Length: 405
Ligand SMILES: Cc1ncc(COP(=O)(O)O)c(C=O)c1O
Image (tube, rainbow, N blue to C red; front, side, top):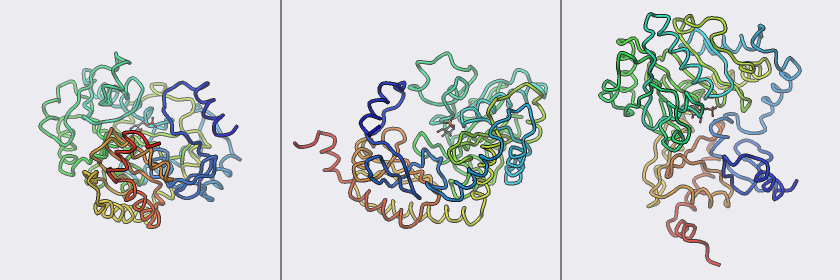
């Protein structure tokens, strides 16, 4: 099929849940992607924070080939060595004692909801069912995770959702205290909110939240699906605040684009769950876990993490120096950076595609930079050159009002 045929077939055969730009990506190397017409794009989205190791990585490809020689799937009815090795490695490199594998970030959050409720039941608090989430949150699209997601647009057509969810103001302890009741089982927070436009929880807020949860017998769940696994320059985003949660959900880069999510938890939570109380056919299969072992080994490497930190700091500094009246604020940590503009980012995104730059958006006016973590100085320079040429009000006005014939 040629490019036009693929785009037509997408309209004909796929449910219209996405609006896609008019090109078809089919290969990549490093931080660059190439489309079916041979056009190259610098990628600042990494498949929405998934492709940490970039594209065309030879040792990842070898690890995948090697893993594919072994068993692909056995189900969770049987022992599976790669799954156990991966769990061991996650435990060794985190606060957690135990792991449950799922297939995505959303499913990890669904599992975390059940684990939190079950913990309360087993500890003599069966009336503690409720969960506090935060304004600006995103936790997924299924009926539990969606209930925790602060978006009228995403929620409205699908109600009724899971009951018992209230939202508190991000970075506001008074608001959290106000929302807590004797029915609160858990509080779920993204240490850095991604979908709402890169908003960082402050160290003081995370520390106070941790203390409050401990004092009140409430479980603290960190959703690190987007901000975890090295993206901030530490393996876990909560480490920047020197706290540990009781549960943490992860996914995106864990198996380099193969579907894998996980819930990491302390022993007391894990021991509240018994056989058959939760499960999944695919979650944590031998093939995907074997690939994830390779990925995790590389992400845990202190040199890799310090590269993310220094590259991220350099990129942030340079973005802050950009001169454009369209630029409102640059914020973030590591390679998770939001560039807030005074205009709708959609127009910039369209122009960027033409110039060989893939940008992704958070809310209407934030460019969300979540590139491959192998991003380097050359990519920063290439990005800044392109952004300098893009963030020109006249150019955006032309895009907005229609091109001249
Ligand atoms: C913080 C956070 N939680 C959960 C999810 C849902 O993950 P998934 O799309 O893998 O189901 C996302 C996805 O963007 C996310 O950013």
